[in-house]
Image (cartoon, rainbow, N blue to C red; front, side, top):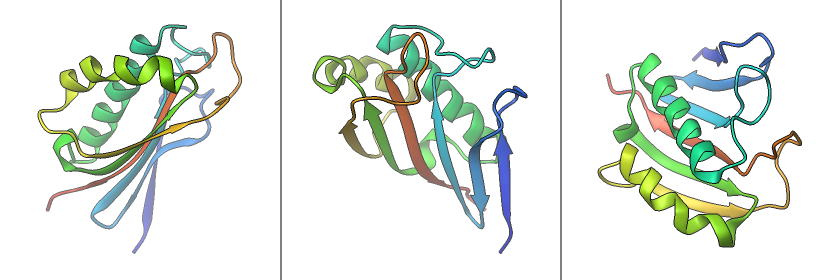
Length: 126
């Protein structure tokens, strides 16, 4: 089985945002804009941007948000932002996939600071 690497559109983003292997796609993304900086200091805007990137990435390989098997969300302000995630989730999901939330002291350093990052695995239906 060969893997296919899906890269970010921006040349500044040299790391992959997804890898396709067989009938699965593995995604890791955050709210980093084309300028290489966080899109906003606001958690909800960062999370919405991040899930929008997930949706676009999944659809580009023939998958969808409904095909997500598991998702891990990394929060830098977990106590403050966990409750804010619900309304953003509702925009992208009818039924939530299996989700784990992890609090961390810092993500990739930038200004404004990143507050959220997402990794996930999804199926690519045949």
